[in-house]
Image 1 (tube, helix red, strand yellow):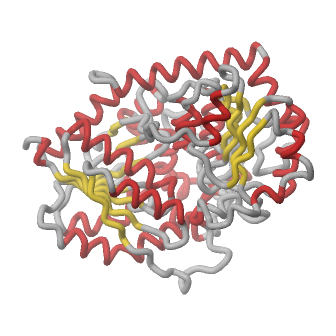
Image 2: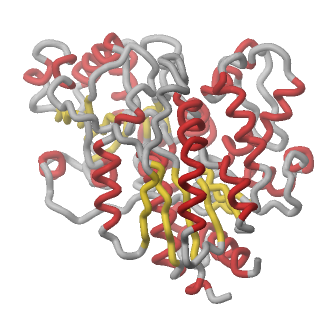
Length: 475
């Protein structure tokens, strides 16, 4: 079949962190491989940013977006229900609507690609006999853990965090107990059960796309393809692995807002961008310490500030962007904005992250290590201060600091204890002023080139996407 006649539907779970990689993937397949793309986006009614983003994306003619209305799940959850579980329930409740949308399509998709929380689509894909692929929009290391967790679940007793030895994923870097993903922190919680189920569902797909590239994670990708013990959990023979990254948003040439204009006036690679993603929040105490650390460091900074939360670190995820931009700055130490007015810029709630990270005056990124943000940093050659908050971010931070050498991190995980101002000041100075920081920056720039090569025609990720398209065409 000619790829120009292909129709691929991509299903996105709620939240900006999931919607962005799906839209980027859709745009890539549409513009580089001439495929008709329909995105089914499960929406939430609470996120203004998400609504605006969908509306803007609708204006692009390369893809069709069908919003799947938000389902009221208030009767199925309570205040203690973890975010991972909420996502799974939201998707589960949206399945009847997703099924009816697919059933009503005049040109039935030749393939269905689903993101990380939408793997519960399996019965629908099988009912309509549509080839199905999972899209894992983060690292191959987290994918290996996802699919192998079903083995750990049977073989390991007690809590993973209490283990004295690292978890051994066949063919991959071992995983320290303190770095396990959030759903593995408490095996009695519903999110753990949902996590294990999701890993099992992954193994029933016709292949998996990963937002990484060969040179970034060679050993793990090799293990996913060739390690008999790791592949023994896969239910599909010859289960293909497609590293197709690093896919990220492109810089939009638009009006130069206040932040970009401020950056224009700064020296080359002199500014640290500080942001915790579309849903990450800090405690009140940690926010105060971070403010003091930035001020004491005397380094230039742009800080995206949102109100603190003394609950879960992911509490803002489904309400990113919010409606309240007034209160964010009120939580900063008294006089902070006045004292740092010549040194830094504080931006309430949201900023153009891709444009900021691609600006020549940005030389560092203090980040929560969400994979979208990490990719946006690496593809611009910007080194990082790793500050993981939730989900798989501890694994990402470990990989960035220990394997790739493009980040420094606090001595103790920020999820375990407060990172004090003195340590923050020290990390800022190490990254921006020392030989160690220079070495980290050079490694980040090499990865930028590696990423560019992977996506160029004939590069590993370009060839991987071609392989996926060929696989769909021949089914």
